[in-house]
Image (cartoon, rainbow, N blue to C red; front, side, top):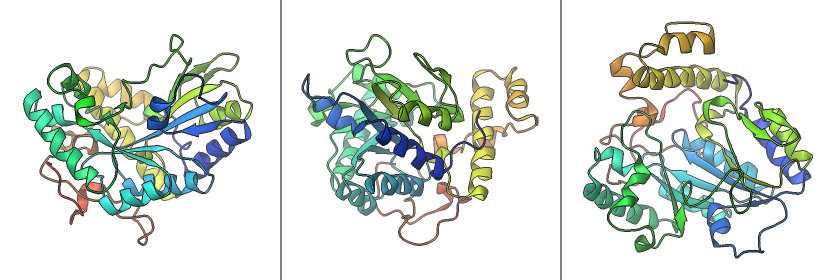
Length: 315
């Protein structure tokens, strides 16, 4: 886990390095709609899963827009703010639904599709939605993308594709796409000629040199910060959240994992704490995030603590 590697300054450095390396940026929609032979020689598909802290998504969107970059921003129901989403679209970005309907309905596929349809309609009341992307829901036994194995198809909802599962990545993909993610606060990606890259600085250096032609980058706004105080809070939160996931999956090894990551045991949340982590916000408590342009945002405020949602979804 990289503890101090995810500041907005570092993210802007990443964008500048890619532009200097001759990369063009694509949204997920643009990539899926591109005909064979139309793709740039060097490109980055930039995706953001807005699991929490939507104000950081707006900050990233601003940093991208001033550089002429378009990205795909996928919002959960409680991080979605209709007017702010419309503003992102006006800036040239794609907005999609980061769905978790199968986990929210505890595996009931029919109910999941009903819920998905209602939420998609709510999103589309503000912005066009052509692609969606499953939320991982690590504390749930359901895999949200499994809802497409039964019932209506993506196409029946007027969707171009799914942000994760409609795109083939890895060494065997048609476009030789390399998937790069900040999950776990460590990029941990192997690039031919560069070895395994862990830090944002290492990834930026590779991009500036044009080290790999086709990349699919996932950056979670909730892992990044604009201030040192905010960074300290995110590190503590991420350590606790990762520990909760380990505790659920491997309870006997959880403490060893936390100690190895942080050097400080005792960070595993209680059962009541883990049940309300941002990864699994209760369905009864959607909340709209504050706009980055609407005044100062408390870096330490968790989205669940805010109320007065702008749009009410099926949550």
